[in-house]
Length: 236
Ligand code: BTN
Image 1: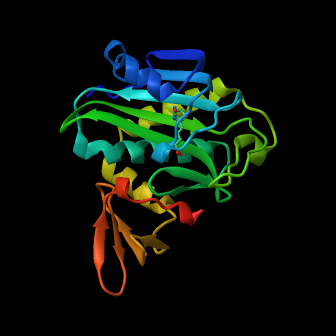
Image 2: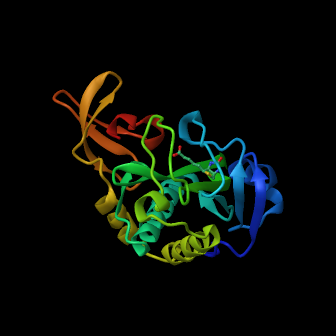
Image 3: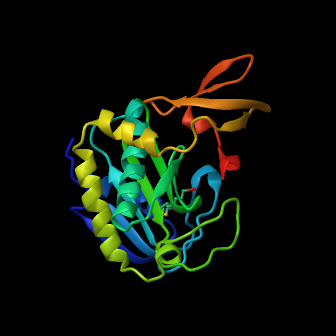
């Protein structure tokens, strides 16, 4: 695999969704391409949610298409969310990861990540779509409370500077040992030992496994649940 992203960066004033653009054009785009939109008319979040995308924030998608095993998809969650945590740290923002990949500062959502793929065991592509709230200074209350760089630090930022910082960090992270990164991911994670409802029953979250599944336990049973099968909305 070539561990470089961002050699080709395409910037658009407006797209429906950067993830859609990459999905529709992945055969013509090289591995590691980055597609940015200043505005998205149909930004998408996880679980079919809308990602409202006004001017002033960073919306982009990264394409991975070389040699990707389905079993490694969770690694992309770890890479992308740890890169956000490190980016925020540069700006003195302390953030945590709400499993699987929401980044929270002040317990409010500052970044959302939508990972999409196609293919069977060896995938055609993985698209990592990232929305980072930068210069927005208020948010309509939805399922979660949101925040931004500006709301925390009280000033505007250049979106391109933040993108370049993020890509530098991501490229460094792609070269690191996964075990080390996974440990960093666990250290930043806020869900272990929290209670959740799963299929109508209350469970305690015991651990996050390397493949991204979580182990939950209650008095009568212990289960391992894949990350795609669980929503932790209640933990905001
Ligand atoms: C979530 O938290 O639900 C994930 C939100 C992901 C939003 C980003 S913005 C860039 C990319 N394009 C999209 O349509 N979605 C992702």
